[in-house]
Image (cartoon, rainbow, N blue to C red; front, side, top):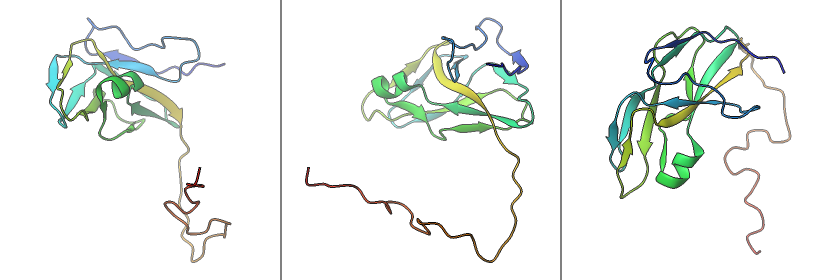
Length: 151
């Protein structure tokens, strides 16, 4: 598999640069640059100490870490957070503590989110009066049903 080269500026050289933990991983871990406390239902912007130059035709997506979600109720308010290819500032994660009772301590260097870089198409919308029809049509949320509840 071919690798995409993404220039990275390490804004906090004491923290390791993001890298995949295992061959084939789809994202790299992002680390907090400072200690903090997230109270129940509180949200905070957590700096991650890196800036990147994502190539045109790609975008970065900041995602929650599943271990933090299941063990501590930590997620991202705007999951996924979008990083456009022309953004050059520090990557930050908008963390939220969804645990109703326990504060969550963030320590400098903790892995708090993930970054995936994905190919995205540049889109041009064409105005029209009618859209092509499909079997689903305008059926929205729940339009395919919830299944057999008698089981």
